Image (tube, rainbow, N blue to C red; front, side, top):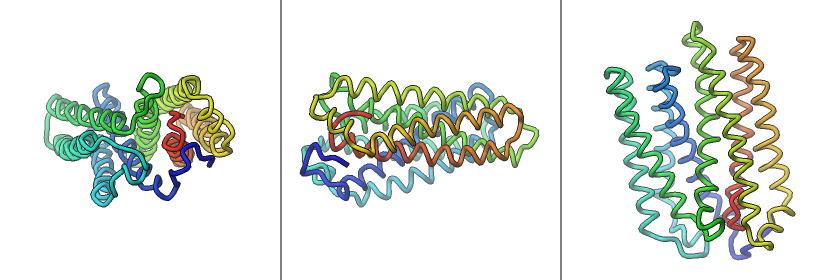
Length: 279
């Protein structure tokens, strides 16, 4: 990738990007699953199982955070220690809330389960917000961090939740295909939000930083090509298979979908830390 801040190196950035992507996956998928629970699309067994998987992803993230060097050393620029500590604390709170939500999925009433899930969603939202504040930049009115992280959490979370939902049809073959079609529609929304973020980020960027992004092959091949074009196309195939009630090929497409989405999100975060342009 092109280098806008020459002191920043990809080996330094890699662990930081992994930490953020894991948080986005866990928090985003939890939020999407809880929304499905509230509107009645997600069975309690699916909600509980998915929450436990999100908890496992978050546990791996917390383990990496425990051994992660000072992010200021990785970025070679100051990082607010208080905000970073707050991000970690809210991530721990999210892990506890996830465990409670999973427990209530098995033993609680519908109302109690959804209330506990709402608490987990609040923790997820605050953890993502603290991450955005910690790794923000002055671009786009100071909201660059939010533009880089929140749409990524929506895309990562919706693809992970959709892939797990596709597998749930193997356990509950009589389940209506309406939840899967809604999951596919949400992924389309997430891709559209990601595209809007890129446009806003590039429009508000410093000309030198914008030039760095637009002349970087990884932006066109991975961020746009894989994260937007391929993800959108594969999601279209997923929608087709969901329409004809073919859950196995739809699940296969969802596997490809999460891979293509992550192949776009990882380099987009790397570019963000190099150029501070949220793409």
